[in-house]
Image (cartoon, rainbow, N blue to C red; front, side, top):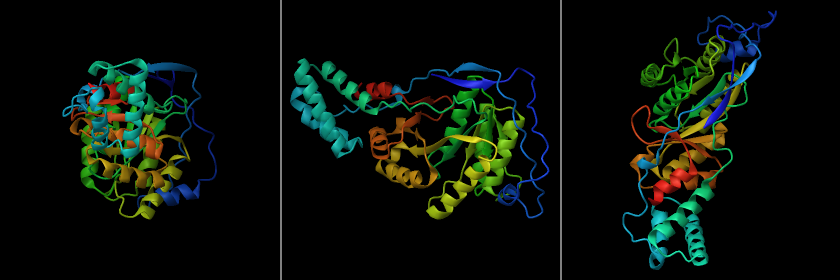
Length: 346
């Protein structure tokens, strides 16, 4: 998979904007971490890109981590009705299970398929086609550097791990990554992400004081990414969903601060695949407040309920873009509907 990143000539420093006489008061009010903080300086604008350089991301397989649907039934023409129960148990949902089985029966009748291999091939085709989306890739090709990726999700779903894995993946393609640790309400969260940032070779922007305003950390992350001519800025956020209003206000504040100097390319919602339909409930709640553009599904290797991918995409209309299938920093890949379908019916 390839994305287009705008690059500068080696050693070229960003060209500063003309000095302005006025400092935007709204930025000062929103991001000052302490009452006595001085107004933040105007971020330095980057030089216009001179050329487009293609960055090819390494291809990784993830199907080996997916549990097959067919550990309990014999898959043949006489047992197609049992397939519906299997799909429901795998979290495809009742309506989806009924439609998939009906499509398999129709395709098998038309083609004369009868063997297990032939029926599995038909099922894989149907699932892959139903999950295929044109917007499944990360939005990292506009050329508006740095690409800002906002990562949201409840605590415990694997946000920190996902950020570390994504940073490492991008670094392997030659991209410079900055991580802003804006989940400032949990000291442990900052320490954890610091470990992953070091492993991934990314620059970490951490709170200067405990409990610092998350928006101010995000702002400092943008400044650092611009100053260092980074390709990607990944911003971690708090995982609290108890009060939607507070969460919405916090995310909106981060968005406003970031967009004073940059553009948010992606808002990734991290969901734990092992939570099944509870994960879908979380996704709906976050989608209401966070303007989610893509899903990062973790622990896909730890569940037999892989159908949650189908439910998320169909019920929310949000594409699954990333998947985690292990604890290692390389156990991570971009979602591919064909590979996923083949893994389910293997």
